[in-house]
Length: 213
Ligand code: SAH
Image (cartoon, rainbow, N blue to C red; front, side, top):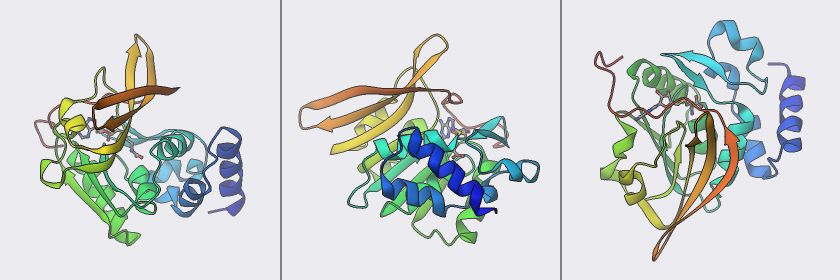
């Protein structure tokens, strides 16, 4: 991949508010061309969401940068991600976290993402096919939770699986035709929520597809 394209993207992310150098370094390191289908590989380092099959998209690099930064991943936390998709965001998280647990409801997407994790030798990712709205009870609590699909409410199970002192970042449907990324912090006494920036994500859908596809 042409290094000039990487540099162009990183400069664009910096200009648009990704200031955490560890996050920028993680994005620089993950070969995004491996996460998109062949016809789109020449656009892999564009700041754009692209189709990945099953009606889903790989997130826009700027959104990956801003959401990763919003998670405050110092001290290599244990993270749960909902919506593996292509596995791109998961791979960015993997270089900043002790372990990343990731759930995807579309089996074909999960299978492809797992192959990419093996290829890149990202051994601290644990991926599973399943309904992310239920979280991952056996591995809870999590220091950080990232949801990469949007819903009107954060599923209660995910809030319950967030450690005290933990941070959850997710897109939320805040009005018709509007989504905002929110950051939720769990304190000793409850939860505090702040709204960060507008986004456009595919919906968070409960359950797994009938054909397991
Ligand atoms: N982070 C991904 C993009 C995610 S698109 C990337 O970088 O490529 C959102 C993903 O969330 C889609 O793959 C969609 O299938 C998945 N998803 C939606 N609802 C879900 C649920 N309840 N459980 C698990 N995954 C879900």
